Length: 117
Length: 111
Image (cartoon, rainbow over all chains, first blue to last red):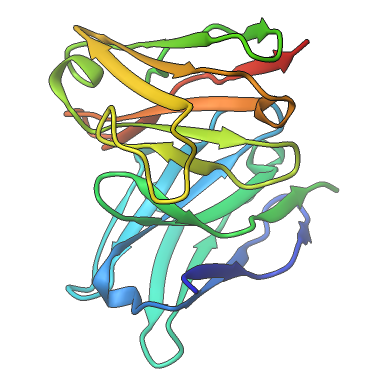
């Protein structure tokens, strides 16, 4: 069964970094682009960035450039997203999602990241 | 990035049909057939219900249908059921620096 399993909730202080994981089951990460999106409470999903594992190519949203890094480990079929310089505005649920035929066809369960002092 | 515009809320009675609109620009909906719709129940991840404007993934009810005219896409749910009560988001490919943009979401209430 195709699914994405994400790591557990995180609580961070302002200025800290966080690294989230997303493990794919039922397909190879290298076969599809893998996106990271986030959704603040009551808000729409927002694109953070994506990775093409086959070509080791990444692209990031303009507002996240310079403080987000997306990587992947093909040996464990796992993608990672690391975000630095966290502020309270980064408090949100972070999702990884597979880009199928021009749509996000498989989603992880989400990881809640709370930034608070 | 500018969000696509959706009504904040819609409602309908069981058995009725409702339509949710999603308005963008020529940089997104008007210039792309890559429009998708997602259903999100509370505390759950979004679920793909339509892609390429009108196509349904395997397992999605035929009560969900989509269309597009100009810069506006629409999701129609026929034969409303209690389980359809959820938030619905549209999404479009864009020709701007942000490749994908979502609508603000519509909260559907089944009366």
